[in-house]
Image 1: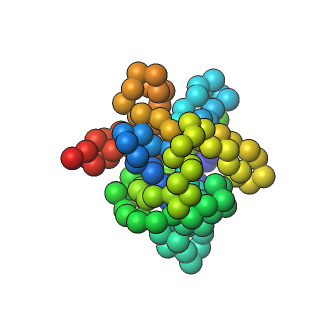
Image 2 (image 1 turned 90 degrees about the vertical axis):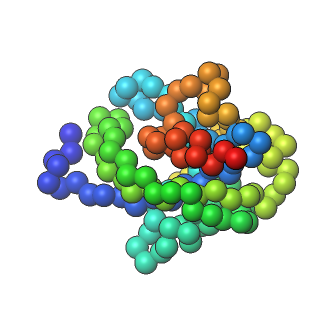
Length: 148
């Protein structure tokens, strides 16, 4: 377990890609809890980089595409435990449009993060079928606030 005095706060940026009541989310797994969960596309903000530049870079790296109409939806502070380790994140949550319209036509999108393949899915975050946790906590509330 990580010593609370030597821990750090990580700054991240994620993008939901809200589209017809769905978001693009990665199917992930916590091996210690033996629990599946959803997480949006995104990643760490690097030193000297804005959160806006970080999400543009992360989407390019992970999905090999660009984004348009980027807008900040909110900022979330996330305290969590993953694989037995405590974590603390400040997460900038964005929405945008994918510049490749074909990505909206498929249920699953293959991506690459740090050399590892992943699968992102178009999910309805409020449908019982997708009721597993969505991280960071508070995303469902933020999505609800975007409804017309």
